[in-house]
Picture 1: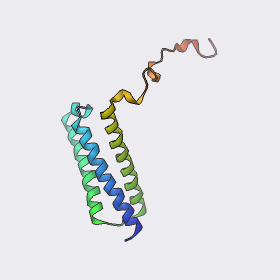
Picture 2: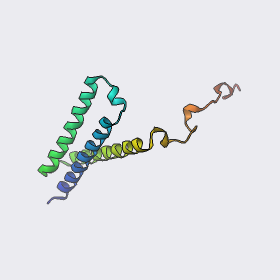
Picture 3: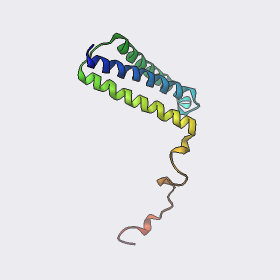
Length: 119
């Protein structure tokens, strides 16, 4: 079997699993997607299902596409694997676990009038 075919099959398998896990976490939690208008939520769901289904079909057919398509599949697999891991951690630890208390730039009480050459 061609190494490009193996890489493509692995990328599509990871992409299928990543999109599926991402979709489960996205629609299982009581997140912002549940508050979207129904058309936006349904369009997102259809797009994710089409992505996962296409990746699964590519994985099962063991095709050897061009190098540019293999690179694209690897990139998408990486993005969705990261998104699934990020959302799993976010659901487990909560949204504030990524930053320490008070370390956000938005929490700064700095007076900008005292900065600059006119100060």
